Image (cartoon, rainbow, N blue to C red; front, side, top):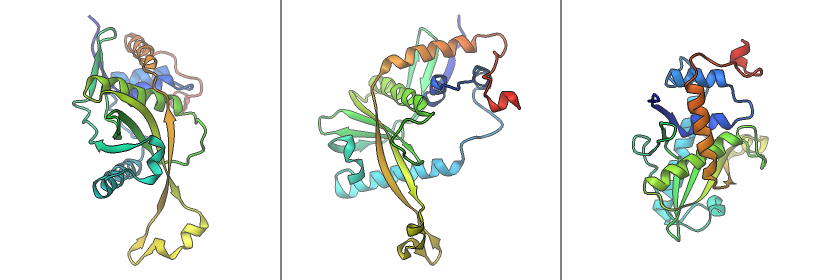
Length: 227
């Protein structure tokens, strides 16, 4: 019997990256991702959580979506994203429990669902090197959602909240307060295709790496391996 594995949709998405490092992934799987360091600064989590509260607050007050989310279609409301302890899918083939918690779940006029992930970053309109991970993460959410009450899922998207930090904004009086200053954000929506077929190969590769008796060779470009 294969030893069960629990993995989040985000960490599963790492397998899809062009510079994926099997050694680092094997170590993280074995440590249940309890690493002695954190590469994702906490401020980004705070901004993402604030973005969600801003959007939900607009829906509650105006009973419609913010104008900058109009590219998501006609939205009639939102659902609180399910907690990761309840949002999960068990894959019997790989004996992997896939979990996660999407940043946002919106309801369209036809009662279908749009799942989004907020990204605090500059939006270039092109697919950056992390896009394969985001694409897999969102499609994993869609796959889980279809089994956890978010039926049907009709669209996926990355919502970039880009800080406005140019010289004009810096000297604009409306951005200054007696206690400090405020920073504006520009919202941009990047559609992600629905493609549930992405997930099974990633789960299979995860199982293959985890079952190795010792850590595999790392990626040549990995900074951790080369350090």
